[in-house]
Image: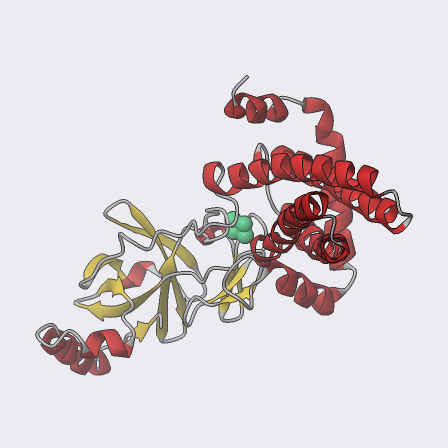
Length: 322
Ligand code: FES
């Protein structure tokens, strides 16, 4: 059976579903019971503040530390020098601390993923628990002077942790967990009309489309905001979400983005939502990809249309999404 076959076999284990649902519910309830504070902790653990999943950074700690431990074990056996034994023990301990952080952040991310990735994530976590147990036992045995047994358990733990890491890689590279799902590449560079201004009611979430790319439009009083419509977390349709003040909440897992600039206000999303500029011309709403000031200044010949459009924008009822 190839490695992909292993993943397929895992996804077919339907008997795991009740456990998945139950654990996700427990995690949701635990964070929800903390109210706004619980959401802040959740945001921190997702890595919303970092613009990157925190979990994948922390997983490097045990992988690196335990690799070092194996090297020190080898050096200890070949040189019989005591300092390598001490270094191996310290490396295992550092790896265990890193694994605890990776477990907490991983569980936090996992509560907001759906099948089939959810099942692969569960098995990934359970295998990691086995790896941690082996390294922890190895450390205990070393402290009790059973060094040979400790080294064997560490080697076993490393093999188990490698299997878990393979599944982690599958979750990211095959199933797109933790990557940015918003469409950034195909947003219009120049203003394009999408639909009539009269069709957009105040406080309404509307889905427009340009070149096959869905765009979210929202009017708040005199301003019109526009964001990429596909949620950066896992691709949820933001136009089917909820307007919460000057933010939009995804209907799938509750990520919240500022209408003003697409920044993430609440996870699980960690990547900001791409933002567009909006203006009204001849009764039509026109949009283009939001360009930061620095980027506009670097495009000299293209500055003139933007200048004239800016002037006209002040004359017409307009707004920008950023
Ligand atoms: S798809 Fe998960 S929060 Fe939007």
